[in-house]
Image 1 (cartoon, rainbow, N blue to C red):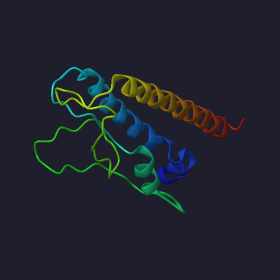
Image 2: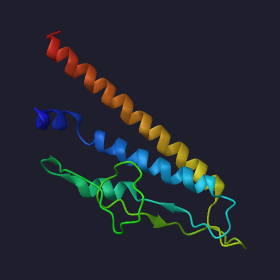
Image 3: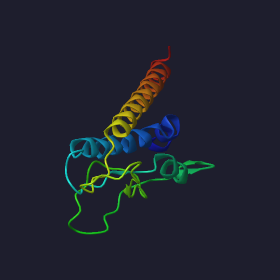
Image 4: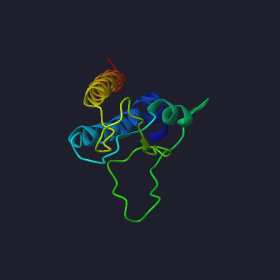
Length: 134
């Protein structure tokens, strides 16, 4: 039954987890825009998701810690390693956060998160009507 549900939902459930994780990262960048020496970070959503897709569907995914002191934020996919972002213009205090870019990426990520939620909601409605025999 679990496999049927996973196939029915496709990659969208995994995309939601990864987008939620990315939202936390981008929010952290925005919150530290004025912190001297703070390095902006992000993940490569497209490459992480494309590595998880196989011709037969989606493989199981999980997060791994590389150090016992790392804090887990949500449950992102395997391979969702944080990367440093190269700044467009160097800052005197060593901070690499560009607020305009962070706000734009945060808004785009939120929009795509909502689109996946809408898709999954439609999919659940279809499954529910199939179960009810409507």
